[in-house]
Amino acid sequence: MIFVAADHNGFRLREQILLYLLRRGEEVYDLGAHDLDPNDDFNIYASEAVKEIREHKGAVGILVCGGGQGMAMTANRFSGMRAAVVWDLEEAEMARNDNDANILCLPARYLEERREEWQAIIDKFLDTPFAKAARYVRRNNALDKLGEGAKK
Image (cartoon, rainbow, N blue to C red; front, side):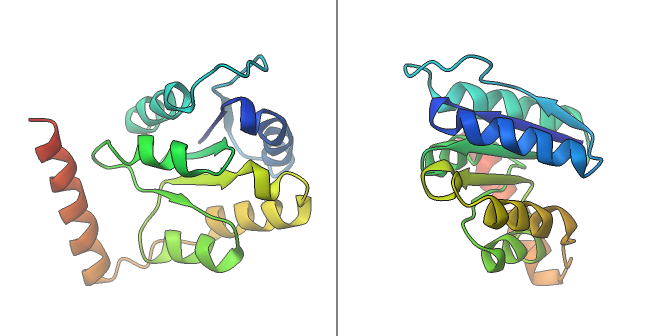
C-alpha cells in the first residue's frame, strides 16, 4: 500500500508517479494535491500521508515537493516516520536497508525531467528490504522515542 502526495511544486511529477506505480501493479492511494494551487502548503499533504501510513501497517509513502525537504521535515516530526529525501539509487537503497525509511521524499525540481532516474529510485526504494541489523533497529527505536518525547 503506497500513499502518494505532493504540493504544487510536485504536482506534475506526482501524476507521473501515480501512473508508474499502477503499471508496477502497486496498491496506490492518491492524497493530492488534486488541483494545481501555487499557494498550497506541503505540510498539509505530508501530514495526511503520515496519518494514512500510521493507520495501515506496512504502508509506505512517496511525497513530492520542490526539493523534497519540506515534506521530509514535516513527516519526520511524527514518531515512527522515517522520511528520506532521495535523489539517487544509492540513497534509495541506504534509506531502506539501513534506516528502514517508510517515506520516500522526491525533489521535483531535480527529478521531474529525469523519468528514468525517478523510476529507478522508486524501484530501488520499494524493492529494498530493511536489513534489520541490531544497530539499525536500535537507532530506529531511539528515533521513535525522541518523537514520543516531543509530544509532551
